[in-house]
Length: 59
Length: 423
Image 1: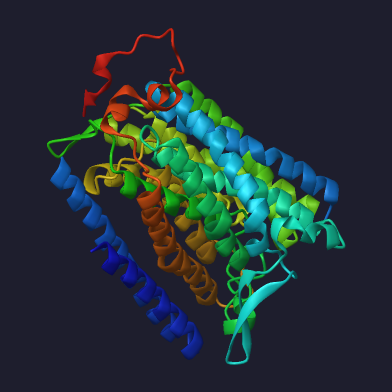
Image 2: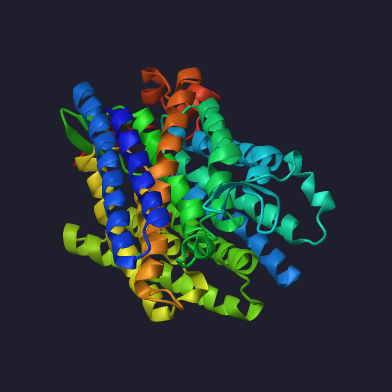
């Protein structure tokens, strides 16, 4: 699960970079950059959930 | 740039380190107090040596040597290529590169202190040194080059048409990088023994709140020096503009502290001293993204939000995500740092449209979360395989002082068994 979280974080950043390289309009860029950040947050959420589950199991 | 003014400001920065060290030590348990301070000194020592040997070469400075990738005929500068062991200083023509190295020698130490707070009471000394070496030798220099060393985030205007990502006082380069490392270390270490019993969190209060509050005052002086020096070196601020930097640092800290006092008064019926101290530092962290470039009114607003936010973040991390962070370092440095970077995009001065300034700051934030966090976490997971991070279960109960140093910080004091108070 932690690997998927890390991969999602990197994927989100790649979307942000793709938006910078391939798009020109501010609105289009904003939508893609926000989407990329949302995917990164999803990855962080997965990582947090993974460690929370470990902690719940050991408590 | 005035050499004397810049040097004087840089010489104030170690006070921020001293302040943070006192805060972290005071918020930990008395049985690990000496260990916490020694870990701080060892962390600073390792950070300074490794940064000079390797990190400074990768961090570089604006106008220095660097490696770049060519994309669509544009040069994406991604890492510095100065000589190793700071040999470049001898051949440099002016004092600029030496001043940058001198400032970063202290700022990398501040970044290294943040995870030590999150790993308080259970992080082994040898592991602290190993993790700090990774941070100072690779992770910090990488992002520092992108923002302060003329890297691709500093050149967004040329590369993408957006304004450059701005981090005047190191809210991202120092605080968020340190905060991400703290989050990763807290995950790898797990909580202290007795922190969670049957799914319920127990409060483990800090052992010396007077030291914590004194640390806040020391940190203010150091922060003014840090913000001023970084503004001069990386953003060309004139010495007369430093007055605004000092005013804004004080205002953001004051607003953060008052917001935390009021929030805890409203939520718990009494102000919480440790959360208020965290609010003070959160204000400083959030305010350092814009330093003297923002108006006092906007700085107060940014500090107020940071101080209020940190009280909720501390609780969410502890109770919802089950992350044990004794000093609240993740909430203060990561949470407030990200807010400060975003707030600069929302309220900072801009020549073009506001949305473009926000986009630039979002690109920087996305890079911190999407590149730096995975790198930091994978690095810590890998290191943990070779150098075990966590002390054994006996050490956890006896305290790090006895376990790793053989003597306590307060040998004449009696240890009480009822240290754990149910929430």
